[in-house]
Image (tube, rainbow, N blue to C red; front, top):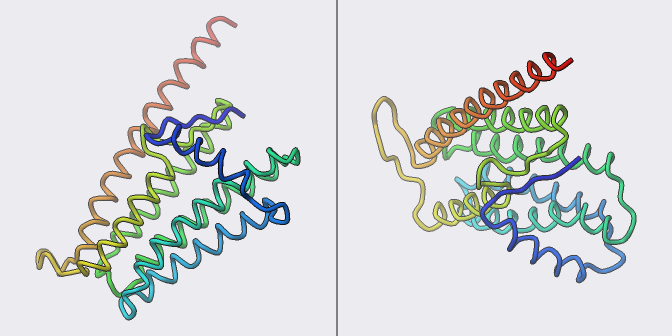
Length: 222
């Protein structure tokens, strides 16, 4: 399956990964890196849950995004570099854990005492549906798109890490009392939910129309 990444920093990121993969010790294999990434995701989720009590956990979460990027980006690459690729296993496990990671991290924000609304649950469901859309599209086109427009997983990690640092230094103040008390996290989650669900609608409609045209064209030729 062809992998397509049009994200802003894709080329620069690939150059960095090409260097990092050579620095990974021989005793560290792809399964270890996959486990490391998943452990980092769990750590981020737990950090968000308890950050209301220990604010330093926002900094911990920011650091764990880097750990997650390291493990998640290098596990498959190191397997290919060492001539031990497992494409079907890797594709299945990697993307399954990506979905679980999104759920763990965003549900951590949702149930945190730092949030007063269910805004981040809408972000969670929208994000997971975007991932399902990407998987389904890949299954019928043979092309797996690693980004939506110019934004990919690495950009999302950078934004999330930067926001975590902001929360540590600036706190999470209540910014509005209407229609209910809304914190910075609540308002950010609401905006993110609108953006993600809008992106989902555009992606689904665009893809469905394109596939419909292609199928009709093939049917007429047949």
